[in-house]
Image (cartoon, rainbow, N blue to C red; front, side, top):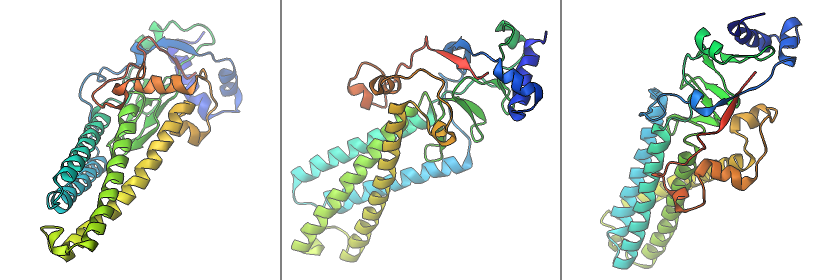
Length: 311
């Protein structure tokens, strides 16, 4: 009888040679092995997580430079020169609150371990400790030498296998996975809201300036004011469309309990089907409360949950 290590290696070669000889036989007689989530939780889950990817860092910086530009135009071109103090206070408070929540959500999405599987845990000693029965095998990721649980995929940027990986997003310089999907959804939602708010304020500002003297509408010259507002309008419209689409696809992915990669690869569903409400609670926490909308609240994904290794 083969050792557990050999059974692990057979799956690697068997998947690459599906339909040939022993590889096919091995796959047909395989069984899944449910194992506690604690076993496959990375030791870095509670530590600071940051991906040192140049492209991702540049994209994250660009994101916030654009937000800071919107902040500048909203405050110094539209709100501070306004004669209506109540209008300035209400809109300034609303815009800055949404911008702060977006910033916090972005940081949490970027600096939270998305669900990385412990790297290099596919050792002989560890596999033997699983006490595999005849016919049971585990799949070892050949790229990061980790025992790969079901619904996990390897990210070439993070160089790790990520549980329930949806996609790698350069704008947050991180993978969107099991542990940080809530923060990514909140980030897209708050960016969409401040984009919509900016567009509404730009429209009102243009209408007021057309009725009044342009020199009294802003501390900047009329040509500069027009250019700044047009750029903000273009930026806000672009961000609104992009983040709204991302928000919608993420909510749909959560409700159907199918990640973006699983939809793209059209993978066979091998996990229990749950209601849309249960899927939402699994990502945002339960029961429903205002904490769903807070980037400072960490959802409980169920520590007792068991995962099945792809075998």
